[in-house]
Image (cartoon, rainbow, N blue to C red; front, side, top):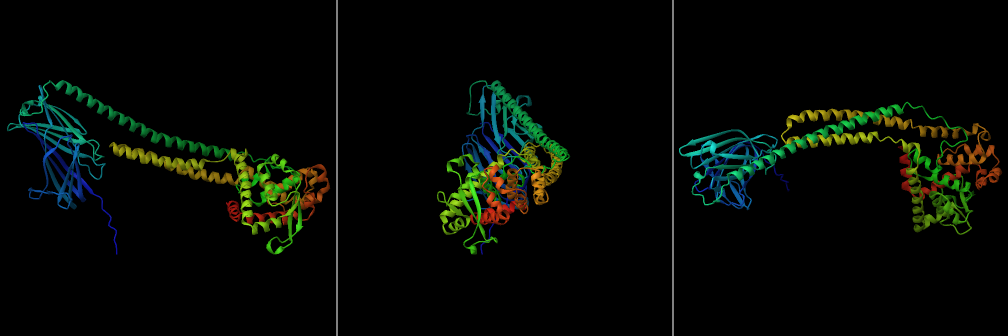
Length: 598
């Protein structure tokens, strides 16, 4: 059985670290690094030593045992436990110590010599040294370090100048003893967040302590060095100020933008609340369409439903009303393959030349193509014949599927671009509230990262408290706005008006249609009833109150004979078109039922 081994990450705290550097009379540097580490788990420790194009002439590393003796480890190339590896490049030496430690304190020392780091001028000697402090695995902890410089000779305090980068001096001490000078700096490391943050010390001191240094520049260098170092310190101070300014600006924006978003949500809530008190639109009077909207767009625009068989049935009746198509109910030749109980199917005849189709809306042109695809010129075709061809020939079915998709796409495109009340007043407030919540959380994460990086955690608590308060308020508004949207959806004035219109259609047989409008206007209403699936009583009322012969006289409509057949709309047209479309696009029918349920 194979087991997966997951490598555990190092976890340790640097309890103490120091750098001891000794400058001898030849200007060479002997360095001793010391680290005391409290390790929860430490497998390998990696250290970098900046060399700045100087070679380590000698080096060794070891561990301080409990009796204060030093156990020097062996250098290997394999990195086995209890050894170390050293690799050098022109810029740095990288040391990898392989000595596993678990829940214990360990003390390391690293000793190395640099060939040349001091330059003698006519008026003094100049030293540049760089080190990389060891950083805890918990990088946000503050880090302290002791830096000791020893000279092989006596130096007066006023004769020594130094410039520090990457650390803050807490205190310093200068000691002259036994012919040597020791200069000690106790430092606080400003930003111990990256493993490559350099601690740099530059010093100018009397060349009397490096009389045998062979690295000589025979000019006076103190003034130019002081000017250069002053400029470096000024540049560092400017960078710190710039970082502080950028942090302040990011902090300000991290609070301001969520605050603006919160106020915007409050304003949206107030406006929505105000809109809820607007009086309802009055009911449309009988014999009138509630609003000038294409019949096939009603379900898409008002009820958020995908186009289906009722839209196509309405389109075919509309084509008949415009005089392009003749529709008649006819008996089926074979009822065994149909679920229509009436035993009738539909017969279609094109009445206009195809050149006139360009005057029609795109969805009506596609509806005519669905009828004429399998029709010979000047002939009559039944829906039963069309369905048989679809079932028998896959290529024909594919053509019908393509046309049906073009038909539904044309309606959907029109519904999106339709300039109706719903499109003018869509409520996007809940989506904006969600976006505000996400934005506030992202700002909180980003500013937390910034604060930790720049050691400003004392500000972080208050900033996070402010952002958390705004996030809670935004979540409350999200709940209220979602509730408002649900309420507005149930009280959508446009939908309510159309619902009242549908209610009138259900009770249409109780009124005298002639009192409210003309026969051609009522035929339009019949077609709207087909699209809204409210055809139970309207055909009977329409044919009862009007003579269908008058329809042919006052309009181009070719639907009179079709309306004369009792129940031809609800019992023949709608079931037949539904069966046809389910055969062409069964998945689309399922999606439409889903949208209706939603």
